[in-house]
Image (cartoon, rainbow, N blue to C red; front, side, top):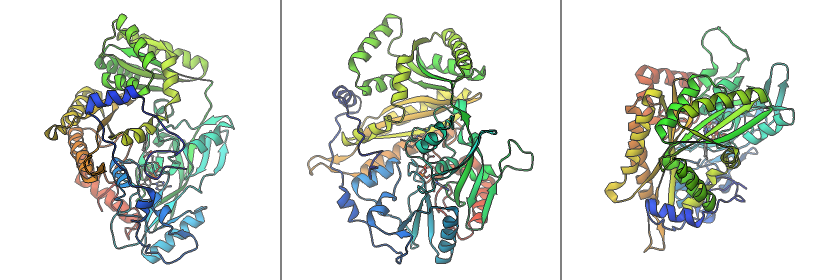
Length: 539
Ligand SMILES: Cc1cc2nc3c(=O)[nH]c(=O)nc-3n(C[C@H](O)[C@H](O)[C@H](O)COP(=O)(O)OP(=O)(O)OC[C@H]3O[C@@H](n4cnc5c(N)ncnc54)[C@H](O)[C@@H]3O)c2cc1C
């Protein structure tokens, strides 16, 4: 069963090695082992539902609690402290497009607000009900999970929109195909969620972001139904798929989508490469991207992320000996790890590997072979479980991301990390901050920053959490980093979307006319403001 107040399946844990605990204590101070609210305590705070009994709507407190929050750090603070405050009044599980249409009709007549819910993995507050006097119904789309059609001639697959990452890959893989969309939240996130948040998978360099994979589909809106037909390309005016991409549940419910799929690759490999420093690594990955080398992934960690990832892996002996070996060949503590992926036919993969290696060597890089790549692949969806363990050890972990042109990459990454590192100095708290380039493009890259700080609480008061203070620390850090991103002309989000947490920053990116345009589109689809209000735009 999914954790109600953290990441992932309850049966999966990520024990914190003793050496990793020591490392964190050195970096940010001893964590406080604070008490979390129990499920029973949290359930006692769920208010009476506004809904009259309805055969399709569940008003059970536990279901409402389990759909009340996503995975942002403010969500975690609310869930773990039991101070959740806003809940949907009901949860409904439609099993067909007709049921979705009927629900929209019911909601319009009854004056109910609707929140579409995919996997609930949003990290920016997308699925949270906001305080209002109006009943809120969460539409959980998990029953819409079927493969409707596979066109093997055109390599197009049509799925219902509530299907999760593993379900998509299982259904395609047994037929010899893959979508190749692997966000780190793959285990739980869904097709509909990916489309309306403009999601990016770890190998989007090869497979494309969801914008490229999404060929067409269907949306049920408060105003009516809309089909987005599938064309390989079209010059018939503006592309309406772009209106849907990034719409964050404000326009309606995506019920199914057609995706561009590929044959399963003949070969896939991931390799660890070390550079002497971050700048050399960044120059190398830029050159690989700009030369059009056919690799499938380039994920470049900075020096502190390289050290921290290895420290938290718990493989002390391996790390010690590898570190010594790298020192001997001249890679000191500034060394940075690149995980390089190659995917395709044997021939394509060999060529991509050879061409990338040439550029890597020209920048002083050292290819270490497949062992590190194998380790990365094994933990690619497991790493988020560490967040549970760190929380329980007294640390809050959050991530933020942006994308900027290459000319701004190094300066933006440095300054964002600096403001985070120094962000709590006035209360003498330290913040551990590190970064990687997660997706690279011809003209720029996305910068993905992780920051860890201590949760606030009072050891003299039965180790009680101080959720307001932990939230305040996050607000200070997030605000400072977001302002730096905007000052460098970066986007407020490369892949997580806007939701609640980025809504205040959107106008800086879109401008007044852009914001008016977005508002008009939302009003056109949803004149009564019943679809997920307050997300994306603060209306
Ligand atoms: C550990 C972790 C790692 C992550 N890694 C990545 C990553 O690598 N790349 C990335 O892009 N993101 C990542 N994310 C963010 C998140 O997984 C994505 O935003 C994802 O696309 C959300 O999908 P979901 O199905 O969980 O949507 P939800 O969280 O349920 O909803 C997100 C938004 O989509 C709307 N929505 C969902 N389904 C529909 C539908 N059918 N019709 C209309 N609206 C709908 C909701 O109303 C909401 O506004 C990560 C999150 C976590 C917690």
